[in-house]
Image 1 (cartoon, rainbow, N blue to C red):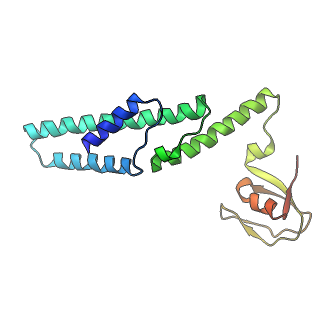
Image 2: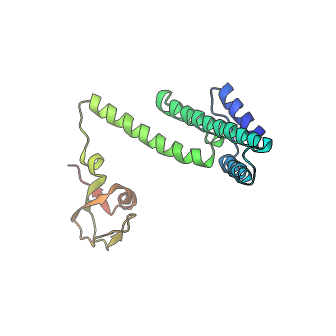
Image 3: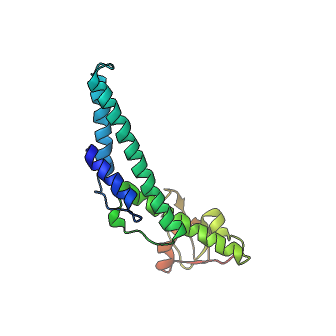
Length: 180
């Protein structure tokens, strides 16, 4: 596994684009480091084998940390500075999760910067995470994604509902967003 880790690190250092890794690469690295630490427990600290194992652990730890850091730097640079998308086939499961969150955060930041430069302030939706809605028809109680109950509502009722719960209501023509 050390050789595999080293080759992945070297490949990442030599190329400017993020390089493909198997989706389970980090779990393999984690298991490898765990097994190395486990092997150390049964060794005499002064033995040559223990010293070599300790060196392997230190180098593997450094390679893993350096590889992860380099890859995340590339993700941030590509999203933030270059404003480009990354081929997600080259990302591990862990990186895909971080990538999605970063992509959303940078889009939101760009929107905030744009609004400020246009002389606009943030609207109520952006400040509270809720929308004010007008119900177009009688609607029974709804259970939101936050497991809170909203309603029941009658036609023409107004309600403040978290954004994440609103999309389908608008799509089905049950509510209309109220501009404040």
